[in-house]
Amino acid sequence: MPEWGAFGRMLRALAVSPGPSSAVSIGADHVSVVQLARGSGPPQLAGYARVGLPDGAVTPSITGQNIQDAQAVNGAVDEALRQLPRRPSRVALVMPDGAAKVSIVHFDEPPISVADLDELIRWQAGSSAPFRLDEAQLAWTPGVRDDAGAQSFVTVLARRDVVREYEAVCDAVAARVGVADLACINLLNAALAHGAGNDGGDWMLVQTAGDAGSIAIVRSDRLLFFRHMPADGGRVEDLVHQTVMYYQDRLGGRGLMRALIVGKGHVDAVIAERLPELRTERLVDRLAPLMDDRGAGGKAPLELLAAPIGILLRDRSRAVEMSAA
Image (cartoon, rainbow, N blue to C red; front, top):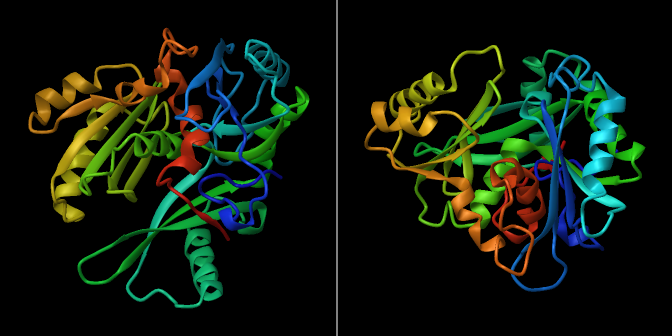
């Protein structure tokens, strides 16, 4: 089993080798791969590729089978990896948000002991899980502490066999998975690596992936709110409006500094119409420093590469880091 990502990494102090410099992202309709240039200077994109998938080849789910057509997915990843400057033997893996359950739990007085806190978080997360906790991988990280002193914790729960499905794709093409993670978590890491939380305020990230979407609200570099909407869950634009209202009414919102948008659709226009006071940016604009004339990024489809870029940048930024429980 690979290291459980930015939401379940081993302590950096125990790491004896650098993280992968190449990442594979498997989505519902495509796979994408990125590779960062070697060296100690600022990160730079050395290569990338995107390969489409047939309809139904990947169906993200927290409870059911995800990889429906292993031959097609394996072939797409192999084709993408062959387009990189160096064929990697070790990669970071980005899975779709629909493959795991992200929750935020709150404790008025969390235990001081890490072991006791682990046990309490496992109990809380397991009480709402749609599968047995002994079949799952669980990780957590501290979230936001409110004005009354209550502490929130962000939990990520995935069935082991679901994670293994995605890992098996990489195994099939001789690319060992060193770290596995979710797409939206690493969009946040890409944003944090490029200054999204530097002003200490609240900000929102909106991702659209086909008909599905994810929304996160972050206070500086701590996750305050997260929601994933599956493809049949409604319109992402409506969810954005509902989320902002919830943030203002229930989360003690201090005012959102900006909304970073990733993906296609008309989210920007809808926010401008319904929430004209909320400034919008494209996350890809913040990734521009990776794309200079020396690298491969001049014409890169950054909307599709931001998450795998984020997982490679997580150790170079104030990443959303979680502890395995």
